[in-house]
Length: 127
Image: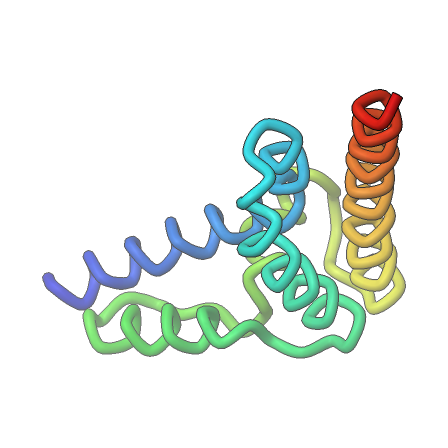
């Protein structure tokens, strides 16, 4: 029972981390200190997607599910849980690179906009 619960908790943490990687830059617009957490997380998320690595949470979840007698899955987290919701079909390497690139571009735009806003505020204070 505990293994099953821990596997579900790992899944929830994984979902939360993925959402933070994708949308955490938006939190930086409100709380700038979040950037200290978001930038490393976004870098890790993009590296995992662009390199084709498997996040360590995936084998952990699979191990916990196996210990509880549940079936584990062979693919990575994105292919198992996210892609079936967003896209039909299997995760291809090209799609994985596209997702990773999308995360990088989205966050670059958010941080660029935030930097421009800070520059404008600094310029108006110096007048």
